[in-house]
Image (cartoon, rainbow, N blue to C red):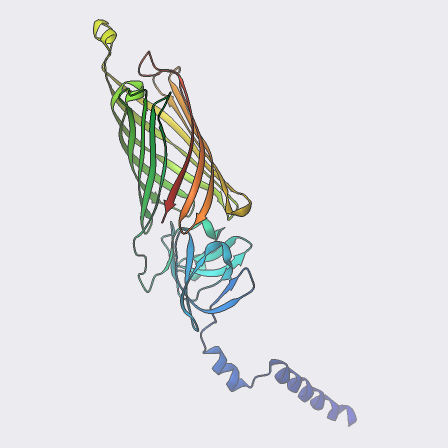
Length: 365
């Protein structure tokens, strides 16, 4: 009889313990389940901000705080965040939900079919665009920079050198438009300046978070090598191998067509074999590397190799090594070494090798 009474008593105690463990009645649990999940932004200093994601752009994350309104936060200060509403991630056609971060890497699940969803993981700083789909907030954005360096010398030596490097990028969804200008004017001892410049336009289409197709158009001249006009068309594929707050490496492979119209010298006009134009199709390979140094300085290195598909002896190499140091309020100083090697210059009088050191100041936005 005692055992018969003890069994229901024990069952009642276990049920009571279960209710006390959850701390909620059945009605309270149902009410709590109806509440939307909490979305929260966690910063690297430990601060937690409840709210909703507005967007992610190349340099920052925009978060609408429940208490402080809309905040723009540097990506490098973001430790974790999540979303409830679906978002559009660069290079992914399906809607995604942000799951959170592990270290530098952001995890998100994409797909409309629950049985066929895919988990993605990529460094947050490598994503140029995340926007809520419901808000259609993927508005065009633009960034850019311009750097200036020069020499003005009078006395025993008369020298006037001016170099301008500028670029601007316009991003709309998975499409990115980029324009660049490289201008160089060099004059010594009052000799008319040699003007070299290149204007380039690129259109990139992101097909995944890391991969993109590119198309490039270029126009310029290089008086220092007797090139009156230069036309370039290129296309290919690029991949961001990695990108985090400390370093990044991108690779590109493609095909490039180059046509040059040459300026003849007096000797060229007397030479029956001289040609006034060259047209070459190259295989192109390039790399773009950066590494963060102390005090927010950054080392960068880019190189490009062009290898003729018609003549194995015709190839070119160009490489830049530099250091960029921020000065505040968008200003920066830049120290750069440029190296160019052309195994078959357009002009027989031109040197195969060119080197140049520049120190300049610039502004980015």
